[in-house]
Image (cartoon, rainbow, N blue to C red; front, side):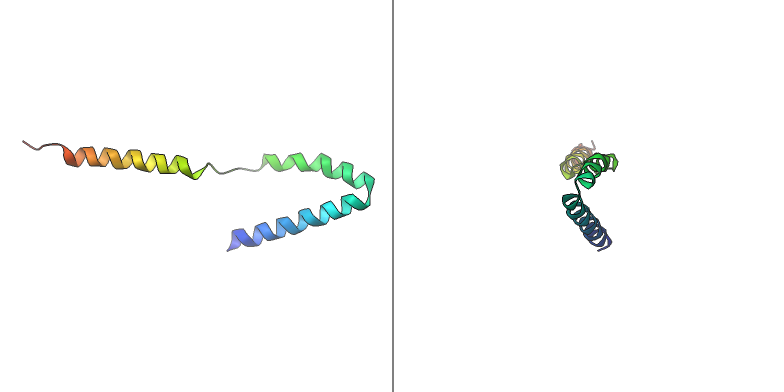
Length: 70
């Protein structure tokens, strides 16, 4: 819920910044200078890597249980 709230605030701020930049040519240059700084924020890894790791762990556990005990 908090993530959704933060995304909503971020979206509103970016929308206001774009509208401001459209009104002022100098604002557009400032916006284009600041926009690449968004790439500095952390981007979480894709979920499918976690799924592959979980499948690998599951296979290891299954091999442990399948070993004969004689």
